[in-house]
Image (cartoon, rainbow, N blue to C red; front, side, top):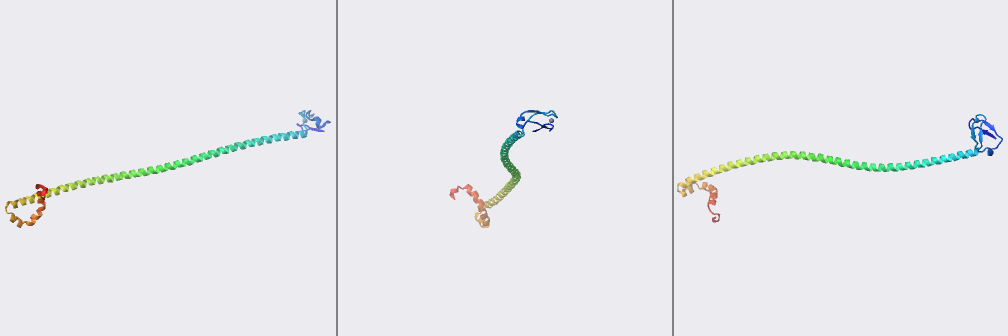
Length: 197
Ligand SMILES: [Zn+2]
């Protein structure tokens, strides 16, 4: 049979068959490379075995990779769900904050308006005090004038009574007397006990 050098690829004819050479140490006459002979079929088996091993390793690696990816995806989905919930909670908080902000603005506005109303109230109170004072002064004047008129009428009456002629007074100034009856009755009431009529 023909043997190929594994190094320089030189061909050497050998008298033995493949089964005899299997596992034997060979040496190249050309490049002096030494190697253990492996038949083509065994070499193929080894290659297939190695391939199978590699495939298994690759399969295992891919399965592991898939497992890791799935775990990571589950973790990421969980994280995303939590963050989304957190985001919606934050949005709710933000909404509340903006509501509070609006309420504070409203309160500030009411407070400012109340200050304006306070000023209006003070002005009205001041004006009322002035009007009350005016009314009081006018009342005092009216009372003084009324007292003066009362005094004057009394003095006129006193003169008429001094003439000692009551009948004449009645005839001459009957209308005037009627006018004075109201004023007189007030004085009489003060002098007489009320139960005499
Ligand atoms: Zn060789």
